[in-house]
Amino acid sequence: MRQSEPLFRDTLFRGKRKRGGYQVVDPPQPALEALVADTHAHLEMLADVPLALARCAAHGLGFLCCVVDVCEGDLVVYDRAEAWRTEAQGLLGEILGDRGPCHTGPYNVSQEGDKGTGRLSHFDTFGDKYVFQNVTNAPSPCHPPIPSIRVAAGCHPHHARHYSKDAQARLLDCASNHLTCAIGEVGLDFHYDFSPREAQREAFRRQVGVAHATGLPLILHLREAHEEALAIMDEEGFPEAGTLLHCFNLGADVLAPWVERGCYIAFGGPLTFKKSDDVRSAALQVPRNRIVTETDAPYMTPEPMRGMECSPEHTIFTAERLAAVFSCEPGEDRRQFLAEVYQNALDLLDREPTAWQGKTQGKAPGAVPDGTPGAAAGTGCDRGPYNLSQCDKLYGPLSHPVPKGEEGHGD
Ligand SMILES: [Zn+2]
Ligand SMILES: [Zn+2]
Image 1 (cartoon, rainbow, N blue to C red):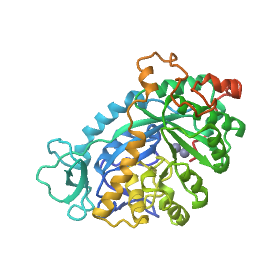
Image 2 (cartoon, helix red, strand yellow; image 1 turned 90 degrees about the vertical axis):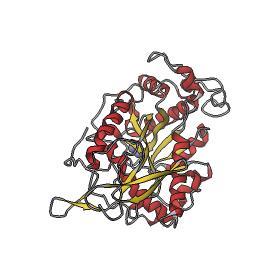
Image 3 (cartoon, protein in one colour; image 1 turned 30 degrees about the vertical axis):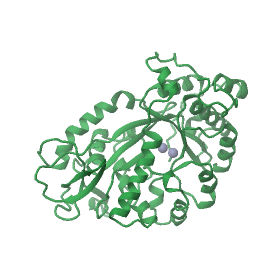
Image 4 (tube, rainbow, N blue to C red; image 1 turned 45 degrees about the vertical axis):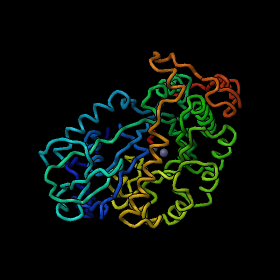
């Protein structure tokens, strides 16, 4: 929990004024035509999760992947996700400023009419996709759905020195929970080097093994280590369920081999930064069926919200920019693009339980099997039917964990 700014219980976006105080920032106008997904948010680090979720609903964020760290962070999301969503549902009427009956059906900030007041306009369902209608003064306002929440669990490279056998057991316990949709964020961070590089490599390889064993996709955090990480992934094998390169903030040259290998690429705040022309041109080389949006909240706030703590609903600013990069004009063109990007996130992360998850359901913590023969035959550290104990043979036993430090997440 952190709280660096006051909490406003409404739907407005606010930026900091140079001389103190806040000013209202306009959301994308015209309003986005489709729902967006935040594929990477550290929910438990937000000051008020239900309020953030209610704001997400109000601004058309339909899906959220919460990233938790088995070596450092709190794993409360597993117990609290549904309670947070219920509380958010209760808050929604309050922040929308209406007393209307509570139906399902999304909203978005109106283009005109109620601009600046935070009132939202009605929008309707069209086929099975939500379409924003920009109707002001809707006679009977309905409430948009609270985003669904899935979880990615892993040991961040910053905490790799804590990746012990116990940590791996915790990770497997998390993975067996059907809320879990991915192993991550894992990888290498040679910018901060908060953990020794050897420990980072080891934790990374082992967790790629966990992704193979559990049949889950992998979410990668890489900083100043793309080349080495690529070599490791080529050795360990890319999980069949998919690999997502998160927070991409570099140029086309660095991105190319990851695109070649069929990875999903997530764009967040850096796509919107003024000096990020290289990131925007790199984005154009990603096939449309491999692009997703994210925030990395509470980090990496996108323009025009920089200076404020990032929250998942800020995804709409990144999504707006991404559509512009792809020259998709507001209207049907942009609706199609955004719907495709949203569907990519659902395809990768809003998945049915894997075969491994099916087998581990209801098992007591600690009793989770450490591998599933055939779950990812032919890939991974033993190049055969996957069994995590094989990783010990290959890499040796996990090094002893060292006492926890106070290092920050730093991304
Ligand atoms: Zn990261
Ligand atoms: Zn992160």
